[in-house]
Image 1: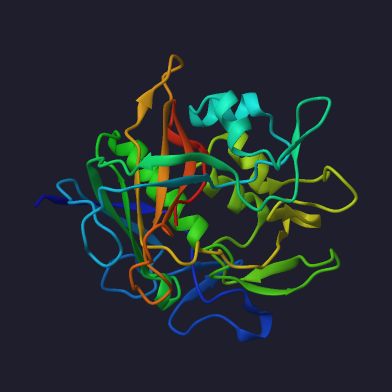
Image 2: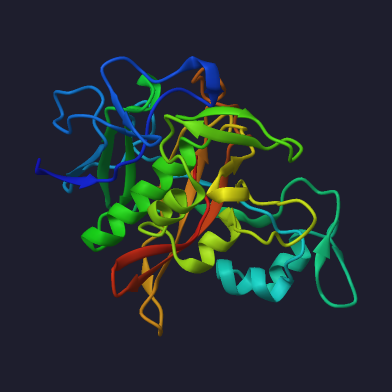
Length: 322
C-alpha cells in the first residue's frame, strides 16, 4: 500500500459552523486584520495547511468497508434537471434522449424544450450495473477546522492525474464542509449572514481567490455572486457585500440519506482535453446500515467534468456522490 502526502498552504479555513460573532477567536491563535494565522505543522492543532494524503493502491469499498457490490439497480440523476432539455441531459449523461423521455413520462417539456414538473427524481436507467472502477483514496486534513471536519477521505478514480485527483478531492471537501468554520452576524440581505472574522476566508475576494484554485471560472459563476448582483438580491451561496464583505446563506451540506457509499465511472478524455465521468452514489442499506429489501436499492448519477488549465486541473462540473 503506497501513500504519499503533500501540503497546500492556504491562509484559510477555521472554526465551527457559522458561530455568532461574539464567540471571538479561538485561544492560542493570532489574528491579523481578520485573517487567522498560526503554526502550520501537523502537530499544531490550528494551522492553515491542507494536508493531502494519497493512497494510490486503494481497494474501493462502501462506507462500512465492504466491497463495491456487483449489482444492477435503477439509476437516478443527481442534480437539478429543471430548466435543462432532453438533449442537454443526454449529452451530459451519455444516455439516449429517446430513452430518457420514455423513462420519465411525468416530466413536462415546454415549447422551447426546457423541462419542468413535480417529479422529485429523474430516472436515467432501470438497470444500471455498478461500475467496478479502480479508485484511489485521498485524505484531506485541515487541523484548524471543527473537529468533525478536520479529516475527510474521498475515493476518486485512480486513473486521474495527480492534480485532477487533488482538485476533485478538495471540491468534495469544500462542498461537504459548506457552512462550517465561520463566525457570522446577521446581514441586511434576507437570509444571508455576514462573515466577520475567524472564518476560512474573511472577505469575498479571499473566498474567490481560494476557490479559483479548485474550480473553473464557469463553476465559480454558480457558487459566487460579486457586486453588482444579478437581481435585487443575490442568489449564490457566497455573495459580495459592500466593502468586500462576504455574505453566505449559512445552511450546511445535505447528504444523501440513506447512503451506503459511492464509486465513479472511468474518466474519459474529451476532444477538448477535459475528463468526463460521474460519481455513482450507492444506496443498498438503510439509515442504520441494514440491507434494504430486494428491489429497493438505487443509484444516483453525479456528472463530473475536470479541465486542465495553465495553473493545473480545475473542477468545471461536479455534484457530490454522497
